[in-house]
Image 1 (tube, rainbow, N blue to C red):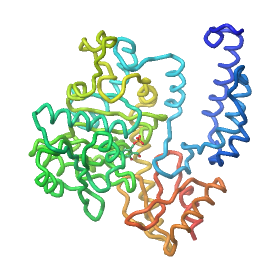
Image 2: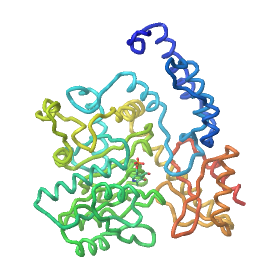
Image 3: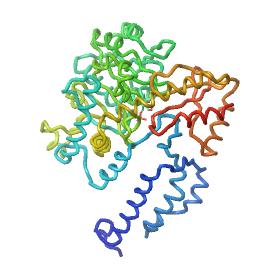
Image 4: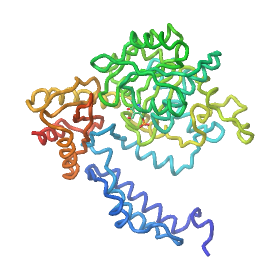
Length: 453
Ligand SMILES: Cc1ncc(COP(=O)(O)O)c(C=O)c1O
């Protein structure tokens, strides 16, 4: 028999485990040429990893060895400067390192009673972001797991607010651009509401006049309009000012989905794209995307946090001691209860480096996107699909079909050169660079273009 507290007592075994893990983490954080890596087929992984869970355990050294030599190499390094697919992640060293502190400190981030210090620091970040986005000082919210949950939580609060105003339509509706992120449709499915998609202009920008037409058609069944501040496919920002003019006139909640792109509002070069943002009733931005925090974190902000609290607070006998106070408990502002203090890595990184270098890093990616777009335009075999606004560059290789892009993309990864997956627009396959890692260089991107000749 082993002692039940073996896993919790501080013993020589514990010291050994902690040393192993911290040494590994230290090395990972201080190496700047970690391989790109790639997935393996399930059967091969199973064979290489072997059985790791049994009654007696295999020991920390062996388990860490499996992680280091089998599991980690089968995970693509998302902070590699040549990871350009989807939306990459590039945590600052301070943010990534502090994530260890968050785990080591056994913090509970759900309530003021249990986590006041952590909640204070998270709220300082949220207040700072609100200020950057032009929201009033009374705005507030919470860090949730990701943009999908952030969008869902904001839309739930929007519908609840419409309900509280006595609106009772046969079917609730949310209006967004046809180029809005798939998480809006996902939220609508969860909420059992209808999505009314509105066509953006040819450049992918949603404007107020198109939103007005949809609102006039569907009346007060529309509980929210979603403007996208940086579409995932193209990094295009909707015309928030004209959309906000309409939502304010008609009294409809405006939610701004800036999961990827809203970070660019910190850049003096890009701030103008976000005019009208100050009218948002709610918004999200994901620090695990372009704010250099580790997975997973989405900052959800409400203009009037009380509306979020009314929609989301869970009531239960054992929770009354938390909810019968006016304390600021992050659990109350989204569809969740138990939560990690996931805003702390961003807090530590911002406190460490200051905001200026964030602005510079974000601006640098926008500039790099412009430079590589110009390079693409200068090459006969390539064609830019749309001029980039932020840091997503989409282009086609003349004469290629889907299979050509797939073969090319697979080869890039097999050669450990880069991770660039094909995308598509209007039924045509294309290639897409999502640039946000400050270590991505022009030469890296040119080297990838050269493989398309
Ligand atoms: C515009 C936009 N909204 C929402 C999301 C969803 O965010 P998450 O993946 O964190 O759930 C994304 C993800 O890329 C996004 O780009």
